[in-house]
Length: 177
Picture 1 (tube, rainbow, N blue to C red):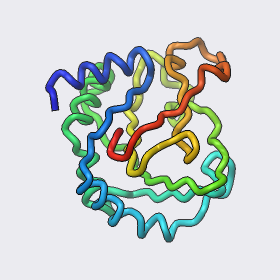
Picture 2 (cartoon, rainbow, N blue to C red):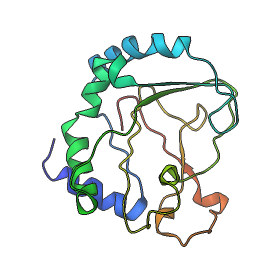
Picture 3 (tube, rainbow, N blue to C red):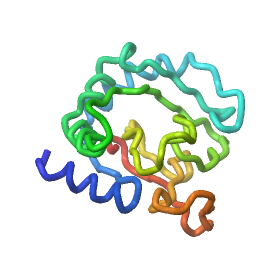
Picture 4 (cartoon, one colour):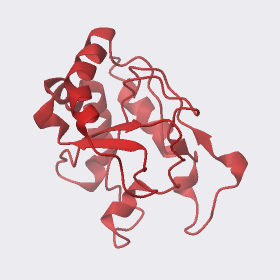
């Protein structure tokens, strides 16, 4: 990858709160990921409430289950961007969790939320608590459940809700992050 790309990723993150990087994974790795992860997804139970999805399957502990997922966790571009993003707030960083999500037909949209809420309300917004990635193993479209995002909302005052026209979907092709 271009050694300046982590800076560009972080520049966009600061403005928009998210960025899509196309074609990070090749077809061979996508195939390997599918063969290693799908048997676990096929056996997973559906969610039991609206937030996790009642027609959605989730599987965790992917690093223990899939060597290919370990490759994603160690991806040099993503780790370089992560290090740069979190470095002002910590001495080191670690992988918090890994999860595969398979959204079933007819599933409703997940309510809008901020991932940082997992840490509670006691961490000041000036402190970045995490660097999250979503790897597309299949094409992500609005129709099949691509994540809803509100670009720039990380800069809003607390309590502001988005207008419908401010909400978009993180549509991306398989192999993107």
